[in-house]
Image 1 (cartoon, rainbow, N blue to C red):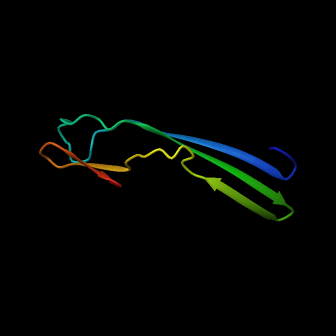
Image 2 (cartoon, rainbow, N blue to C red):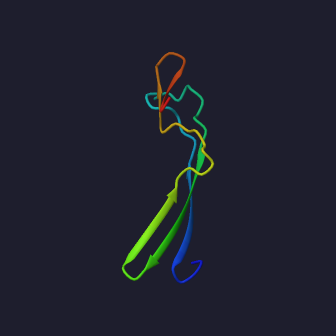
Length: 79
């Protein structure tokens, strides 16, 4: 809490490394893990609050879903 009316926050989420979907034999390399960092600022007075949130503050690119095509490559989403 910064003052009686302002609060600041920081969130760090880690997604560990994982094998692509459909790679049941785990023949492909693991997809690297990543950190996702978010910050927030809140102003509250009486029964009113205003929130400001910035997600992915370092603008890191990452894949939320990776699929193994069964031959030799991975398909990333979002691409």
